[in-house]
Length: 178
Image 1 (cartoon, rainbow, N blue to C red):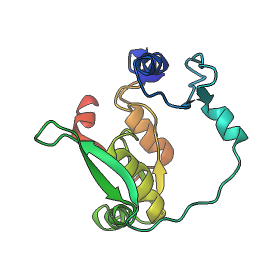
Image 2: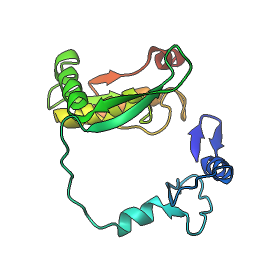
Image 3: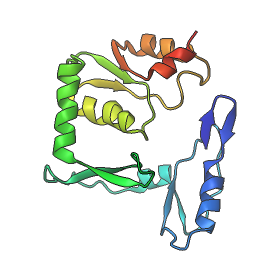
């Protein structure tokens, strides 16, 4: 489920409805249960509980890739309204993120960085995960919307509790805090 300020979004129901209309069906779906909020029913032979998969998984070594190996594909409509895939290469993207963390944001190993964004957005995974990880910088990851969940004071609590000394967020998020 998804957490919004005033409601719970039942993503599993939305997923099941979408899959019912698909011609091509996935072999498996990995489902992350928010056990402290709501546990959804899993579809037999399709759904895999994330915690069960994690607990029962065998360890695997990291897989080295070439620097020009695709890290991810970002789909953007641009000015045409038609989706176009933009490929970010592993080496180029990680080099750029490492450079910006150290040079643009002036971060060092003893700093605590917080990107108040969603992990699903390009800024989120780039500056919550990849940039700090490659730079050896501590990164705070917050699930939810700190500007409203459960209240706007979350920004201040997170900064104080984790001793954040640099952050990245959208101006629109800061406008909510009063």
